[in-house]
Image (cartoon, rainbow, N blue to C red; front, top):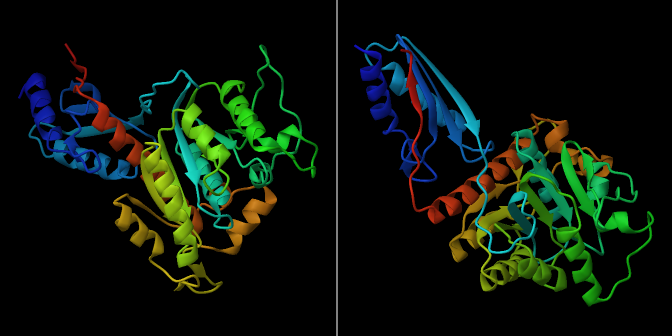
Length: 364
């Protein structure tokens, strides 16, 4: 069989490989690139829309299995790559940032900042370029959780300044605008000014994802961000009990009213795992996050446990996702981050009207 015939059969086989999130085959999606056939050796790239794709290994395995089954193929080399797509923005704000994700809650105390930090960490570990904006002006906790000393940011040109950087993540926080331990005493209109500075005066550079940790509630900061920033989507954090769900639903309705896509719900502090056993103890009830997702017909992104390693990581400036790869909390946050990235890809795929092609080459 000629190399060209093998290549045509490989293409046909790959048209049967479906992306389970986007519900199209990987050829139509333009994922297959740089195919080469040399004798019985076949190699090609599968370029995904995010390095945090939760089905990456599943797609790789299916591609290898189906191509190996073709007569004349002796070796298959599938190279999984990713290029994060930029969300469609109507405003020229943060032109180098491809996706802006707001993490919100209706009330305080649900671990929203912990979720923000660990989603950012998981995305960074996947290979993405990540920024983290601490928009909780009155209670900025991100510097502590990331292990960043309270020091003024480095000044740039045109009244701009550079974010701090730690663990490979670029970070901006209101905590850097005052001396350590001193409160920022501001009236409502001044809050919007600080948020606009974070959007317009920070040299964020090129980012795949900017995670914005919002303050609890539905006030000035949230409204300023939804009006001034081209948000790609929002994640709502809740805990399982009813009193948390009531307030989380208000956050969902806020994003619906301002037309920000809801990427889904995270149930934090979902369960406790004691030392020496694997049993999940649901100390705050269970199923609240799933029921809320069902009620509003939005994705349920997953459950994250409450364990001592999560608390220690936040206090010591080393998020558990970086510190302990085998922790059940790390696995949960990586899963949540993958689902967040997948939902962004689904939204973007729905906005795309044309199918792309891929390059083929074989040895002369």
